[in-house]
Image (cartoon, rainbow, N blue to C red; front, side, top):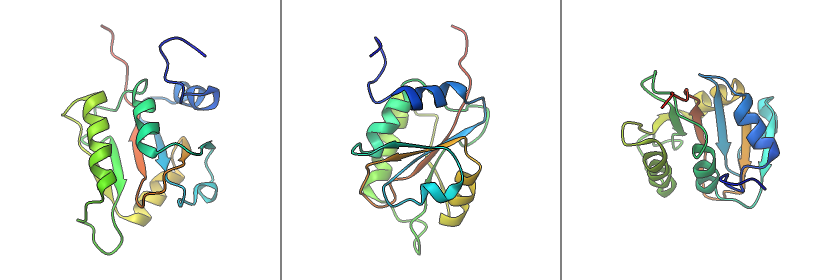
Length: 144
């Protein structure tokens, strides 16, 4: 255990977040997501909601402010404009950790899968709510 770090950030996840560079993506996905099929390193955090994992990750990972979008959710199949309750929870965590200038963009299901296939890693949460998937683009830590 380390002081000041969220206990959700175990050695595998913390090492992965540290190893990522500016512009790298990381996916936090639900229990239904085909994570192993993506061909990326998989970190399992079974039993934890995706929103809890997102909050822990954003406690140390800056979002990319050089691009217009740095966080994406998967669109609901057959209704791209549909809003699942978890989407608002994702937004609240992003605003709390990164500020209101960041928005939650969306990607069509297969476009989301393609982006995850290029991600640095995939974190499988214990999220059971449908569409509990989010992609994050790492930014830079600016000097104070």
